[in-house]
Length: 335
Image (tube, rainbow, N blue to C red):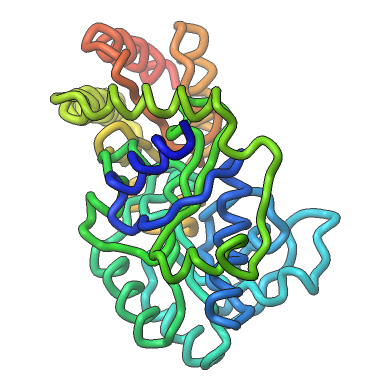
């Protein structure tokens, strides 16, 4: 089963020539980080403010006020020495990334990001930003990793990299490839992935990695997603949902912005546009809390944070969308 699912993932995701299964998205990102360092022989990495890559020590870092500031740990129990090699930049800010590469010449192993942010709310990248990251990492001998734990097989069958037409060096994936069961994966170019043991010297293993139950569920899930019309359904239903929510909010006089790509969507209680975490932080979180409670009272369970993206599924119908918009209309009038 593991080999069968591996072949499906390799066929689907443009960057993946070899893949290793793990048990979670966190494991996948931790392992991809180790691969970047092992392959390049460098230590430092760049991540972006508001992008979440699991609870690994090196990723629990918030950007400082300066784009060249070394990260400080965001959680007790994380030593500052562990996060010191983690550099942060604002999302959608290519100049900040260029400044980091200039300040740490020859020291940066790679760049990791969510190619569509889902952990600061739904934030869409500028395609020029993604292309710029692709160009500068190649120029500087660093690797580019797309964290597709959220976007993989959600916004297109080949993930965000297929949607944007930009191929990273490494990709991480999450529970979508296991039908929601505990599974993750990381993969990329064959020469890069060949550093992983037993083919290479970089060690990574897991007792439950590639367990048969998750592999079987993943195969069946991806077969369903391959059926004609699957992503067309997700795109249509999600656009109807977010358009309806925004329309009702504006009719009721509320500042709100948002958008969607295929089955992924999000909205912010702010005028917008929202291009990064700093923009997202301007949202009225108290109003979101009241909105969430009002929707919950009407039987609609949205992600319980202003800073989480939402997802639709093939099970959602037009009737579900209509009921959600009707509930929102009532709640917006009372906010």
